[in-house]
Length: 190
Image (cartoon, rainbow, N blue to C red):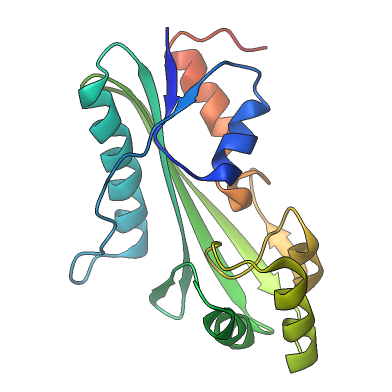
């Protein structure tokens, strides 16, 4: 069975490669605009399902993985910063605080959904100085990462603690749940 990752994220691609299964990446072309008053968990679930569904409809014989991630902080969603200035502002606002990162995963073939999973990882940021933030932004340029950090790199130095069921979820694809859902879909994994 053909496996497709409905994403152009290099982080998700690199994570999925760890499972040793051949797969293709296809951009899902989904509008990621939040709906009015949409709760963060509802948004991340909707987008993971929409991404998987968009590609699964065009490739009904393929097993498709859709995923989305967001940071929920102070009742709002933090997206990818895009600019150094926004990354600095995001990290400064999270200094010394807890931030929830929600990573949703949906696996589909055609119209059949093998499962939907949402990981909630809580990151406790240490107290960050302006110099800490500046050094980090210059070193890693995390402008394409929700929350303005790369936990698989130097971003780990910004934390006091991480509470999670799956450390890969914070990078962008929860591999424990992905493995479970792929086994449910018929893939042979150890």
